[in-house]
Image 1 (cartoon, rainbow, N blue to C red):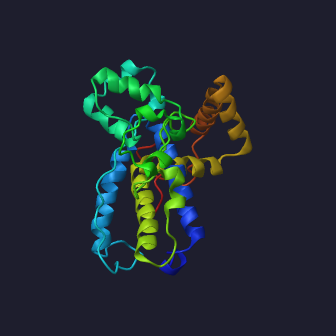
Image 2 (image 1 turned 180 degrees about the vertical axis):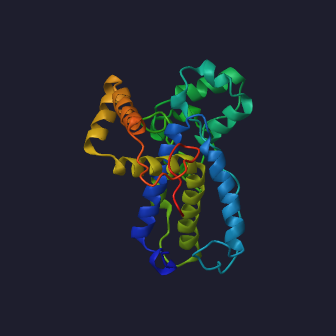
Image 3 (image 1 turned 45 degrees about the vertical axis):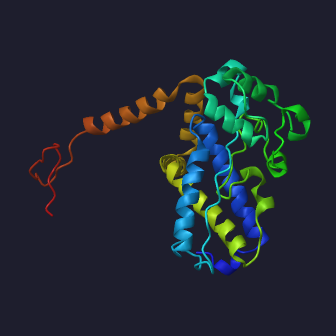
Length: 269
């Protein structure tokens, strides 16, 4: 348990932000077809409801309720597509939202919207031609949204605060005020929520680690050989032969005790 007084500083804010970035990036790599932004928006609504009711563990209730801001358009991960034709499969509405997220003109036919989006793939906001931008485009959105996402083809998804998660530390207002407390608490809530989605993987990883700690050096070497050359069967065969040898040995029963269902003497107790 970490006291609230230790959470409202820059160091802790940077720590939870880095942890969220790591977990969200890992989630996108193992679940590339899942839209994490949709989960984040759901968590945001859930968090604000609990925050206003003072139900967030480890945090005092806010001095005044926080209202949910209107949803901002979700950018498309253009790095996932290979052509404008593939973008057309998303439909008019989704392409319009993607264009609005980049501050671009969102009118036209399906093919025109797809071509407009495809033309800015891989470009930074300042490299987008002015004739493609909407007159009422938001400069803040243009500065904070990356067109092509990160190096592995994913977009830098928004965090619970509605900003790009990889730049979220720059949006946190550290301090004991309601805004700073709420933003850090929301990142904590996102981390807890994404861990619940990854619970099976976390449990499997923990079990694998504990099992590795009980293995001898020779067993670990055999496992490595199995991964490289497929020789794990030797270890399993040896273990099975050892068990067979034990079963084939003479039965030790000096007191002539009655035998159980497994063929072994039944102890007195």
